Length: 295
Ligand code: SF4
Ligand code: SF4
Image (cartoon, rainbow, N blue to C red; front, side, top):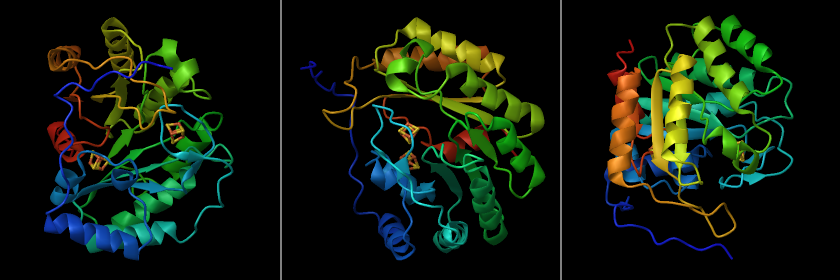
C-alpha cells in the first residue's frame, strides 16, 4: 500500500455554504441540467468563485475516452453529443449573469473533430446572449485532429473564438506515461503554439499540478518550455488525490516554493501566474484575464 502523506496545515478547504449567490447559482444549474466542474470535483474554491459570478462548465458529457489516474472524471463509451447543450449553456450563463465562464470538457477521441465544433457552438451561442461575459476554454488535446480543430476555430471567428485558450500540460514530461496515458507532452505544447500563431491576439494559458513525483527543477523546465511556445499565463496548484484509487500525493509543496515558482514565472515573462496550493486551473481566472491586459 502506498504511504498516505498527512495534509499540511496550509491545505485548507473553505466552506461553501451561507452565500446567497452560491445557492441561487446551484438552483439554476439544476433546472438547466448543466454540470459544473466546481461541483463535480468538489472544488475547494466553489463558494468564492460562485460568489463572484465565475463558474466552470463541463460540456460533451461525463464519460472521458482517456483514463488519467489523477482524474476523478468517469470514463467509458461517451454518449452522443447533446445538440441542445450549446443553447442550454448560453441560456444558463445569461440567467446567472456570470461575468467570467470557463468551458471545459472530457476528451472525445471518438469524435472526428475532437469536439471542436461543439466548443465553437457553445462559445458563439453564449456570446450571442451574454456579449459582455468573458469566455475561457480549457480544451482537450485534439490529438490526431489538431489542424482540423484549429480550422474550425478559424472558420467561425470571431464569435466562435474564446477570450482565453487554456490547455493544461498537467505534469512534467517524465511522468506523462504514468499520469497522462494517451497524451503527448510535445503535442500539447504544439497545440498552444499553433493556436497562438493563428490567433495572436488571444492569450494562451496552461497549468501544472505539483505533488505527482516531479522535482522543482522539472517544473521550472516545463515553465521555460511554455514560454518557448509563447504561452502567456500559468497556473500551478497542489495535486490532492480524489481517492485511494487515484495516484497518491507524493509531496506537499511548501508555500515558499510556490512563491519561488511565481517569482520565476514573472521573470520568465508570463503575463500572469496563479501559483499556490489551492490554485486550480480556473481559480481567479477572471483576474488572470484582466491582469493580462486582455481587451
Ligand atoms: Fe469552479 Fe474553477 Fe472556481 Fe473551482 S476554481 S470553483 S472549478 S471556477
Ligand atoms: Fe480526466 Fe482530462 Fe484525463 Fe479525461 S483526459 S481522464 S477528463 S484529465
